[in-house]
Image (cartoon, rainbow, N blue to C red; front, side, top):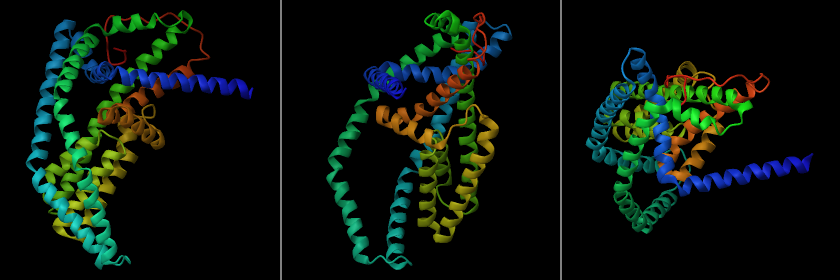
Length: 355
């Protein structure tokens, strides 16, 4: 029994290893396709609504994509404009915050002497100077990757058009690879997973917006400078669970410490914690539901694997992929005891259908 279980685990681990390497080797195709799946899950309800109102599927696809691009362009213009306009002042505030923390470590209640803090500061300065060349090479790599980003964006848009227009036919073709007796439950699992993926994306955007508004209002009331860029940073960070909210909240607290003092920083920390508690205990259960919620350990491990495999894009895609896999496993487990039925067929992709 133990030997059989060990062999199965080894086979699963080997398959997972090969899949990860295959994904890494084909990342220029896999990442745009994954982004297209996410966007199709977000836009499929719009296309379905237009089709039900007697709009041709091709025209409905064009309307959904053009409308989505317009909204995305406006949002990115607003977010990036706010971040860029306050980037210089934000960097200065953070530098002042680091100095304030250093002073507090020396003069505050902690038993740290000036020599200890100076040693830590010198080590940080040496690390930055030693890694300056590496940071410069990273910047050159990012600048040189603009062409790859544009290529990926074009491929994502191309795949998205066909997912929205011919999603039902593509999904039926994929189901042909599944044995006939398991095809109905696989079809049901795929459609429910696709629906939950769209729900996750919409809920994440709504939660990030509410977090940004709540923390931004708190910063305005407390008189903290750069409230708009900081709230935009909170909004962007909300799309990376756990890590994004923590980092953006820490930046807001540091800026409040440098500009308004310790009391305001403590109040900002209270605002950040209150908003995050509201998010975790009210907003996420209400907007995402039981099927979409994941354990924090699973989220952390998924983000870690995503960062290792694909950097920032991997961090963004890790949790949606985990959500999709979890939904499929739950649906397949629930329907395992049910007798197989005919494969469901439909005319077009709606909110509950796979692309």
